[in-house]
Length: 124
Image (cartoon, rainbow, N blue to C red; front, side):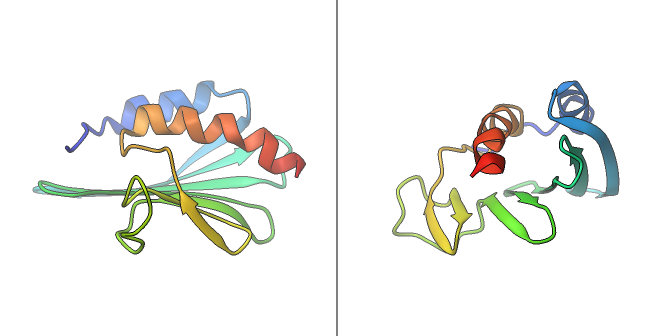
């Protein structure tokens, strides 16, 4: 099931998040029946960032949330690379492992889940 993508609502959610110090819209590329969006959030503490990418077509929706400082810390995405994982295609990359993710492809809900996990990841 494809979820509606309201990029303005997502940006508003990000700006209201207490972990976010700044939201940068890096790319918006919309043509008929396809959209590509890339957003960077500068986090508190300031050395951490999260890049968010969405690609939406009539039939597919791909996402990626990558947390990093000077190198990648964690990434959640739904590229269909790991069909044996529960909740395929949603998965999570952390410490050179790939695990099942609880994300659903609903950006508004997924952003809340990802940002609820960030404090623990930053303290690890």
